[in-house]
Every structure is written in structure tokens, then in C-alpha cells.
Length: 370
Image 1 (cartoon, rainbow, N blue to C red):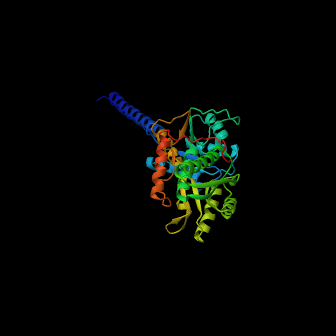
Image 2: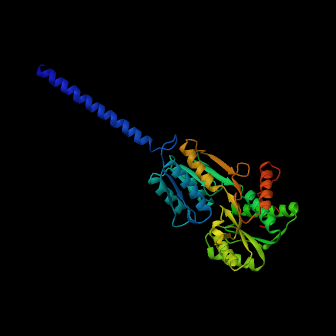
């Protein structure tokens, strides 16, 4: 073969190899990029910014985080959370930005305090997705704007409070009850009003005789003052209150602590837990807990559902979702060791009547104790 043809053949072979290498490199890059985007089953990362509490607060933050963890472990993807230095809009936006910069494009924010921060974040980070629980984005003027990359989730707290009120009245039959709330915000108020309606329903329909006095309905003003919660509970128990519904985050943990101390000393006092099943938090000796039952919101399930929805390319952006009795988004625990079988059966029927629309629970104060 003449040298000129040999050189041409070598050139063609070398150029073909180079072209093939570049094609393979381009395909590999496209594949890697596809693996980093959300939707359609591809991998992404999920972050959460906590409110004033922590991810082990036995309440709202913990429930949200457990939903994130369950979903991300199931999917085999990364998760992370950040606890801000403070609770201002600037504090929240800073940590949302830190998560975004680290590649977390689905960010969950538990609580109404995130409303203005998410309002700004949803337009600043348009390629990210946001989940705000118990709140809706607005600029501080309460004109709600849920962006196409945001979903706002609420719960019918009054319904789970109602069920807990019925269960408490049925189990204890007669005596005084109390309520300790954290901040006086709609979600906490609805728990209170629902609980009062549930107690009244049991009195009117099942012959119980439970009372709630105005002096035993108190909002502490925060969600993290454990010592104040214990002090308030002590004062109520000293006034003869048998059970306290504590919808107050860390303040409620203080109430549970006081109940455990007294129960250990032989007193029969109880706490009704909130948000999640707090039975384990109330254990004071083997096999015994001071938690009578808990008024639960499907916080964990809601967080889990939103992660899965994003993974499946079905993120309900731009929507406001409500979890209630009809979609099993609220209730009391499936197992309540301190409730009798008879009580659980009656509460189950009340729950079914709520689902069927036979029992309507108001989410407004009306004539109820504020």
C-alpha cells in the first residue's frame, strides 16, 4: 500500500476513535445530569429548615422530619436539615439559601412562621420546590400567593381535637379538664375549640360530666418554654384538673414532665398529646404512660407524600391541600393503651360519623372558651 493511502487510513481510524470517544463522553454527561434532576423517578435531594423546635421535639418538627427521612431512605436519596440561629424571616431565608446552594431542590418548612420566607424563596429559587406545612406564602399582608413550585398544607385540627375530647371524656367520665396552648395561632386555637366541642358532645350524647373552666385554658405564648409548661400544668393539677390537652410543642413536653412526676407519686393525672402519638414520651415506669391519647395530624404522612409526589413527577405545585377526617389526615392513635376497648369503639364510630358528614366540627370559636 502506498504511504499516502496508509497515512489516510491511519487518519480516518484515529478520527473515528476520537469521534466515538466524544460521543460516549457526551452520552455519559447527559446520563449524569439526568440523574441529578427531580421527577420521573430520578434522584434529587430533600432538605428541611426547622422552626423554633428541633427534629426530636416529640411534636411538629419531629413529625415532619420523620416523614422526610422515611421517604428519602425508601428512595435512597440524600436528606438534610438545618436549625436556624433565630426565627425571623431573614434567619429562615438564609438557611433555605444554604440548602439550595448545596443542591437541595425540595425544601420542607414546618410552621406558619415560614410564610413570608417561603413567599420570597419561591420566586427567588424558581427551579426548587417548597412544601410549607400549616401556612401559606404571603408578603406579610396575608394576601396568599402559592407559587407553581410550592404546595401549602393544612390540617383540620379541630377534628382531631374533637376526637381526643370525646375519648378523654368517655374514659374519665367526670371532673375538670384543662388546655395549654403554645402561641395563640389558628392551628393551636382550633385544637382547643375542637377539644371543647368533643367534650361537650360526649356530655350530651354519652352521659359524661366533664367540665372545662376558663381559668384552665391558657396560652403560654411560645413553643419552647419547657419550664413554663411544667409550671402551668402543676397549677392546673393543683386545682383538681384530671387531664390537660397540651398543644404546645416544647411547652407541652413540660406539661408531660409534670404529669409523669405526679403519676410516679401515685396521682392519677393525664396529658392528651398533640400532633403525633406522644405515648412513648409519657412513659414514667415500665408499661405505664401519662399520655391518655393524642390528637394527631398526619404530619409525617404529608411530608412523605410530598417527597414521593416530587419523585413521581406529580408535585401538586400551586395548590393548598387540607388533610382531614375524610382523607384520614387527622385522628387519634390506632393503639391507645390507656383507653378501654369500649371507649375506642365509640370513638371509632364518632370518627366514621365525621367522615360521613353526620358530625360537623366548627373551626371557629363561637361561644367556646378562647
